[in-house]
Image (cartoon, rainbow, N blue to C red; front, side):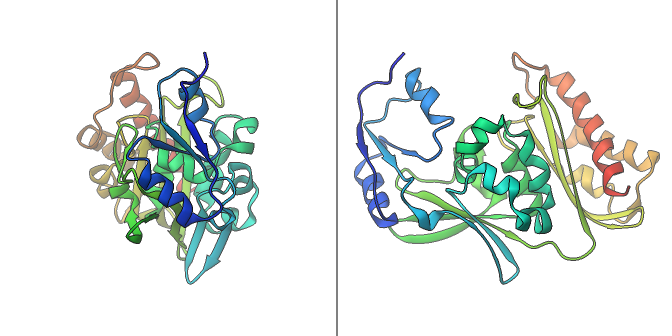
Length: 284
């Protein structure tokens, strides 16, 4: 199929892009990497009146570390993030997740901000940002604002972004000494959408874990922070007994859904298994 007719604009500045989104009246869409957008256009699942191509906005590219913050520009390609020494050094959780995002051809073109803004419930990056306590920077006609990752993802493919706003960057506080990360997901084939996934981040002292954040994805319409389960681990040594208690507490935090790929019951089983894996990895 071919997309329905639309107007095309390629702004040369952020202000120009925001102006186009404003005049679009909710019928404009942003083209960044296009790895999710183009299929929906071709299948006419999306029929915008205006496509705003932001690929010339170099100010939205790159990775910077300053003032205790790692900043990733929205237009930074996945492959650049995947190969970044700053990412590997400061946010290894994201480095662990990157190879699981689709396939190399997709990562060559897809953008970090595009993945976050799409808010696919099975996507890896939203859960990583939730686990790391990141903030999402948003630009609009009234200036820039920052939204914690926990408040940015609202529902299935829904975020705090307004129609006339643009995600410009993600800011992640640099982990302090003693913090470790772990990442796991289960998919039918490598590169497929996850049936269940988990991004974890915690302070680790030997076998003892505290300030644990367990961010699950592909279990709900948004990434889910399993706070009750994490509380069961606080200040305790990770052993079979502790892991079993944390796994039991997932029943409070998670309400998995059924779909064509996986049943809710199986997702809960996977969530328990991944919890055990990441906890053992954290203290290994």
